[in-house]
Length: 416
Ligand SMILES: Cc1cc2nc3c(=O)[nH]c(=O)nc-3n(C[C@H](O)[C@H](O)[C@H](O)COP(=O)(O)OP(=O)(O)OC[C@H]3O[C@@H](n4cnc5c(N)ncnc54)[C@H](O)[C@@H]3O)c2cc1C
Image (cartoon, rainbow, N blue to C red; front, side, top):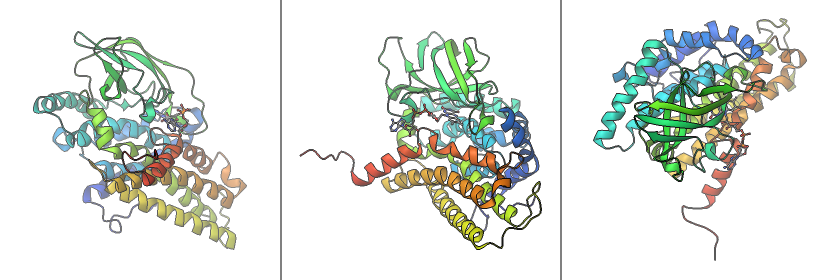
């Protein structure tokens, strides 16, 4: 390995587990994922070989609690590890987030939430089935929640419904941008549970269900030819009267809603891919200007003051982004203070916007030859553009919430 860690373990006082996981991810990224990334991107194909490597390395179970045989990583440990992956393949890191959420939300997050004893025991039984599939069989979970309306932003109930029936639920609905579609073994679907088909949907009845990809009535439709994050293969999923049995829950009924209100950092899991891309754009620029980038002519361009200034700007933005992101990840947990939530939004916004800002500075500074498709930078630039679009915490929504919540305390308004 030649690349230095994004977060040096001594400087950032990482735990032993974080040091070990980030080293493992950097090694996989540098020695395997980096070389495969351009083909997956060009062909818009899911990086299945990388997932086999994750499985062999035990990383599919990174956030499975240790008592079930996983690494038991918390959000920060996972995020630091995924950032190292994103540095070499943005799509692999982004899709890994979808998979990992099925374990993090049902694991460490659920353990921080309120459930009565019976519900918790039942949750223990159901999640252990999901965890065994992942650890033993290498099962891959995805996380389709976007529907094209306001549900993914968290303001209305999901229109995909799970109607209670004998022995399980019947699911009907449609999910757009379903990353890993066609490759995941289970679609970790957010839907609204209804006791009867004509009940009024409510956000408090959101249910997180693992729908087998092979279940009757599951269809993947539409094409996938986007600007960036092409290897996520985020096509449209249709659920046409899909029966899923009891035991398919990733969280007990009502617990997702509690998690979204009491554990808001759970939505920062999309950021590590972009933290890695920000570092990758910076690394590329330094190597390129030093004439040391593999695949580029060994021409040094570092002696021009404008280039030095641009690298300084990039470094400052990278350090600022790392600092706020690390702090927000370190604060993740139940019932954060208002200050911590505002910082989480600011960190999300910073990573998602700055990754692309650093990548565009990298292209301007390195010049025309750097944006050829034979080099990684133009992919980094395209991939990084997608970060601020990710619901529920898009860059715009972060701005809206920071502005409003900084100026209004809960319950305040401007009525006379
Ligand atoms: C590469 C990629 C992979 C993805 N993978 C997944 C996945 O695996 N699972 C998944 O569920 N989704 C996934 N998404 C979807 C993503 O999370 C968003 O749902 C999607 O980008 C929204 O697109 P839209 O055009 O429907 O946005 P719209 O809903 O039309 O919103 C457009 C913009 O308006 C703003 N906006 C929207 N709603 C509100 C609101 N209520 N209040 C204030 N502002 C609002 C936001 O800034 C948003 O960016 C992926 C997206 C991309 C680009």
